[in-house]
Length: 144
Image (cartoon, rainbow, N blue to C red; front, side, top):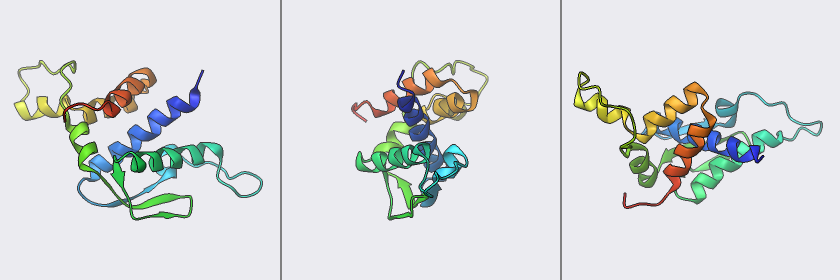
């Protein structure tokens, strides 16, 4: 099983969601805030898990989902913000989201059916397969 891919989905989703919650402000994204504290190896280098999370953030930047000004050693990305591409995809309405509660205001139903809200629920509830599906769906290029 490719556990590093599941970690990638979790890291990418958590990073994008963190930026979405700060949007449109630029923030510093610390790897430790996404995955918790990881002890460096015996040479003082970041753990493989830490490096993978940082790699996921850098990949998101290379693919146009976020922009940043600099790295802070191997600890964080500084002055990070979502791109328009990521913002549009995170606010995309998922028709399969269960938001048929007509007692809720339309604005609440809209938010609950968004990709960002569905990712938030999957992260909160620890549904790794649902999180993987949502993250893959986020990366699928459609007419935004």
